[in-house]
Image 1 (cartoon, rainbow, N blue to C red):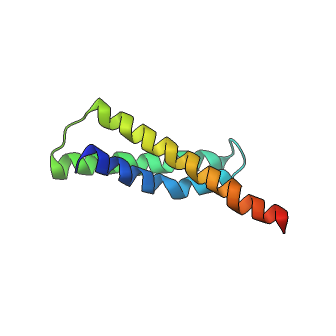
Image 2: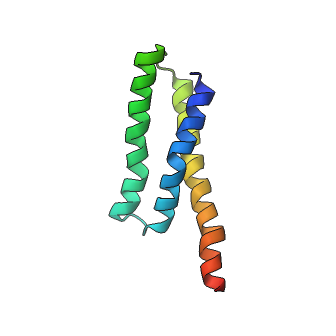
Length: 91
């Protein structure tokens, strides 16, 4: 598994949690959980990747993962506010 594939997996893993984060009140317990739970799964996935595929640690992969994680959270929050919240206000 290369770095790009791993970053895509991170993106799709963090995306639903971005919706959860967008629905939660800022800095509430649910908001904090929506940010930190996918990090736990990403760490487990990285350990699995190290054991199964024998891929060593790389700072570039960390950078790709951070960008994928943050963009998934941002995009999910943006989609939630644009489409779901706006429809509720119109109704």
